[in-house]
Image 1: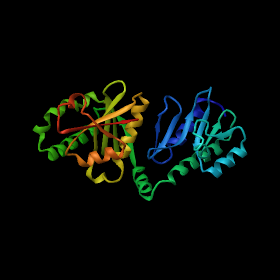
Image 2: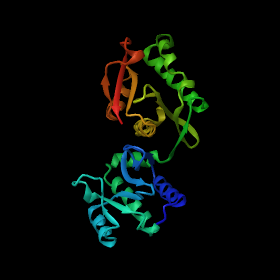
Image 3: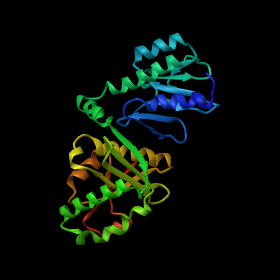
Length: 279
């Protein structure tokens, strides 16, 4: 298979066209990893010097492909021995059957999704009906959702005046990495991050409309924001939330965030809780 722009784009597009899939780069520039509900099913290296793709597989199918294409398809080259039966690495320089490759990508996706619980599968079907758009802090839909978030926070903590000292840290013109989620063209959720320092991205303005809660959307939004932050070179995500925000704290803890001493501007704010997660 020729290592050219058209072939690379075709493979990338096919992976991304699977339901609920997004790109991440947890190991550096390459491989490009494709995830569904946070789980990797494909790892693609488009470099001319190492033109390969590693795909999730059921052990019987994985072994079948290795026998069908000996030395071209091998056990996942980078996987620990215990994981190698579940992954195949395909040498794309020596493999020419694009239709077969697409079939293996489908099977890799299915191998991951089939392991999900019924609840997670239901969430996936719901979340795939949504559209995720990258934008910046000036986006009017983001501004509208931030206003709703602030209104909700004012009600929970007792009024805008009590929260006025937080406004300086949430100015939208200082936030460039924003994601807005749409349902049938209507904005229903948002989230963002901005640079705290070279290693830390600070998650900001995460909000889901009440009618779209309890479907896993906040967790999916956090996963996608983390993936974007990792691509930009950050090693950690940090965030601040309020002690009265029990539902938000639950979501963050479930996503793997741990409470840390209050950082920076929040150091002397007893009503704040700060959290972090290595990405």
